[in-house]
Length: 72
Image 1 (cartoon, rainbow, N blue to C red):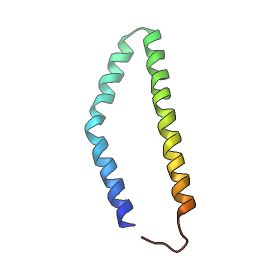
Image 2 (cartoon, rainbow, N blue to C red):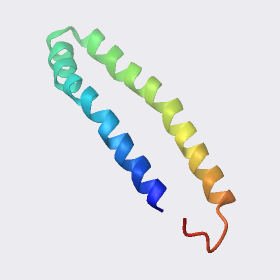
Image 3 (cartoon, rainbow, N blue to C red):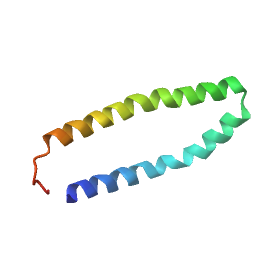
Image 4 (cartoon, rainbow, N blue to C red):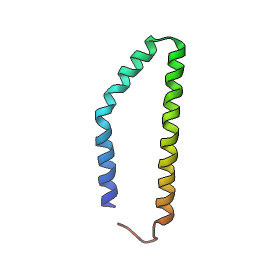
């Protein structure tokens, strides 16, 4: 379980430097025409879908291979 906590902490800290780009992207996209706003929303969904699929796949594999009573 300690390894899981370390992994979660690493992922949270690794994402922090990229968090500043969200407000900049929002301001830039809201100043543009409707077609560019729509394209940005669509591109976010296109990039998010495979990521969520593979994260879910890894979760299923880990869940299925987890031995009962294994509390590491």
